[in-house]
Amino acid sequence: MDYLIHIRKTGTAAEFATKVGVARSTFFEYMDYMRNELNIVILYDRSDKTYYYSNKGLYDSLKQWIA
Image 1 (cartoon, rainbow, N blue to C red):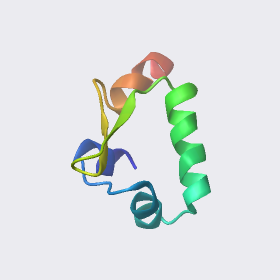
Image 2 (image 1 turned 45 degrees about the horizontal axis):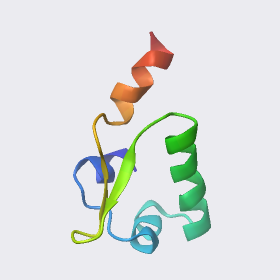
Image 3 (image 1 turned 135 degrees about the vertical axis):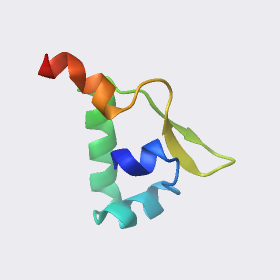
C-alpha cells in the first residue's frame, strides 16, 4: 500500500483494494487504521484518481514509534 500511495498509482478505492488483494471494506479498514491510529495524512485526488500522502509518508510517520 505504501509504495502505491507514494508513487501515486493507487486508482480508485475498488482498484486499490484489488491491487493489494483485499476486499474493498478491508481496504477502508486499513486506511482508517493508517489515518487514525498512525496519524498518517492520506488524501484522494479525484482528477488523478489516486490516494497520496499530504506531507510525510508511512516510514516518516512511523519514526516516532521506532525511536
